[in-house]
Image (cartoon, rainbow, N blue to C red):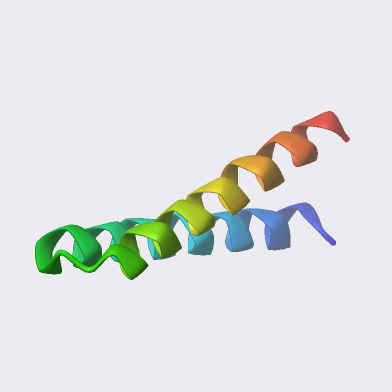
Length: 53
């Protein structure tokens, strides 16, 4: 996967995490808070493994 594609995916994951946290916290729906955590963990794990290469 190219570097620009990785950054595009990472940006998408960060945006999805922020949106999920926003909906979950404003509506009190735990599913969206957990979903945001999954997106955020995917972002950080992908970013850290990208830095190792």
